[in-house]
Length: 252
Image (tube, rainbow, N blue to C red; front, top):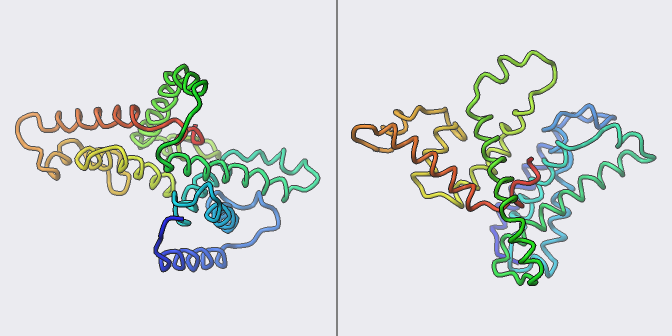
């Protein structure tokens, strides 16, 4: 297994225990909001991640903290797809819910391991299948990023949403999802592209106009704001070209 900072892992466990203790307890799972459900099931993610960390599949590939992070992405995806009617129509709702979440978490961890494993032998018939599906996979990635950035670019969604239901676009505005997007940016973009996209959409800061970004990044000369817009456009296309569909499929 990869080396990791034991102090960071201990700090993570302490923070998780503190959040879990402060979480109001409800008899019915449906009474928890999304954040509450995430905190409630994060110990389950840790247990599953620890089992993977001792397996041959993950050995030398990912640290326990990396496995937990991938599992948490799967947890968020699972919570957003819960069908409460199906859960509570089963003989054992708690068991059914945990089983549903566990499958998503395990799948997310396995994808993370596969992505980080490096050189993977793929049978020829699978390579042919991949080639056939490549174009549709890229369309899926493009749909994901276009949807995310369109949502982040729209400040009026909540203001004009008069229904009591939470608007669908809000799923792209949670802190954990924002961190996931930032990680994708760091992995696939250079520093300037990363900063332009980050500031344009206010991912970890206030939103900036193209002119403001040009000034902050010392992009000078006439038409500097146009250059910023072009950098943003090129960066998004770079993400679509480089990000694998398996990294975004659970969010569609």
